[in-house]
Image (cartoon, rainbow, N blue to C red; front, side, top):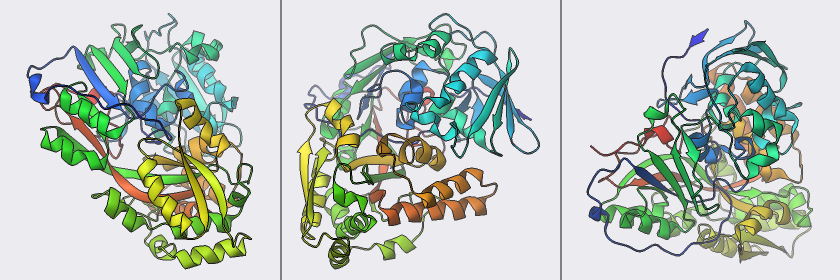
Length: 518
């Protein structure tokens, strides 16, 4: 039995960002030093994308939105500062001998914004939503998923038993992510209401001053027992999609913390901004269409491999992303599945690309369109030249709206997004195999098998073997076309905020980790 005694909040990030957004005009203002007093009333976080583009159902979004949803929802288990699972809505968890049943003991007295209270029946009602195919975060535990939950049973008002279709040792880590976030009774009964109104028990509630798609204002929830663990009375998430505008907002004092891209780090540092960095995010071109529905050529694995060979990753990094790492691996360098073999196998080779195109029946090339945003435009223009050199015409179209950007997963064959691999199994089931990057419902037996092996791995050796197999097949199949591994950069106003820290290898800081400067 695992007894949990600490109170850290949060959940593991998997997908570290959203796709292909438009731009926002740069923010102006005075120097950072103008705000010299420590202010605990409000923390403003500048983020690169709209965390509530799909509304406030935490199971509809990827784990890149975890930091945002952490303010509104509690998780069954919480991500602790060292990256391990700690107490959340469950005070302890217990596996049976063969790890096919996980029993959770729940807190008492937890209240949701709809007035309902936490009990085992509510946890069951949440997890029983796993049959809803729109809830991509639950895809791994749905029928047929590698971590399939066969049943959820109420043992007592404060105990719930989760029975798996097959052994799932280590499953508790999943409950520190958005998968473990619990929605109140009204939200479960009418999930459509979550499109506009959150229904959580988290440390904050959504303030009416929120402007969807622009800024999200959260105020302290006094009914939450752990609200005191969060230093700020109010947290504002301001959506600033343009990287330079986000850096300008931080420097000017309009944001206290902000995600920075590598090209803006030196600028921010020169203005006195503090920067914390962590690796693990792979900037990746994602083949949305593996069936040829939007562009016939993409149905061919050889065509997708040709794109791998056509891109000069080192030149891309040298020109646009100094400090980052060119990569031919889908998984990051510190991952157990990373392999140097891919660097050799898929090294830049335009002649090989042309040969594969000819074998696939596209000796004269082909044409397609990709949707770009402020953060992706320059990279895509560089890739555009590489593809043109082998006969592929990639038209780069700027997204006219957020709606167009998100619709691209169904209307275009290829996209570009940052992928975080803190929880590889969760990312595969929540986004790659069953989630929003595969709306055409393509299948790959090798990818499914490798993901299942990674989910079932009981020791480090088995995990490494499965993840290496998964990594290799992701690249070989062209489902993912990695470009470079970027460092996750979080700038902070040193006059107001203490050094930003990370929970284990998670690229998104815990909301509870933000503290006022001494």
